[in-house]
Length: 142
Ligand code: CMP
Image 1 (cartoon, rainbow, N blue to C red):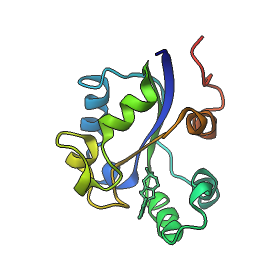
Image 2: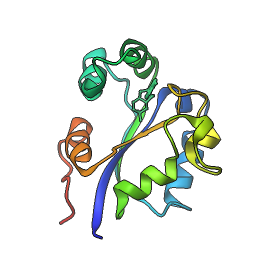
Image 3: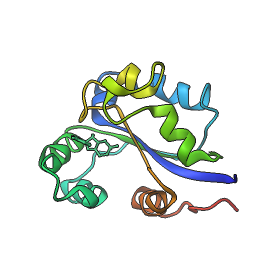
């Protein structure tokens, strides 16, 4: 296991609901993730379509882009030992109804689309997703 960096986005539903602070506190506190970069940003359609390009052919793609551009989101780079897999566990399953008790999506997600947060699902994804938002941040740990 090694120290890794991964991308997390607090999505527009969680920002709108005023849950960003609680989510960040969970990530830094119980999660033990270190924040290496963070900002609030309103995604353009172009940026959202590019970020989720892997889902372009899925039936939910149009709704997903509408949702992700519906208000500001908070992308951030998180660092920790084995960060990518640990963060996936910490946020819970994509569908909040199936997310484990105490996970971020169980606590703050509403449905399979409005699920409060996104996290990179593999090191290949993190390598693309970190520079999408933070081209100035190294993907690997020095
Ligand atoms: P995320 O982890 O950001 O990855 C893709 C997103 O598409 C997902 O979270 C949800 O917000 C959204 N989505 C909507 N419907 C579905 C679905 N049926 N399966 C997976 N993701 C979905």
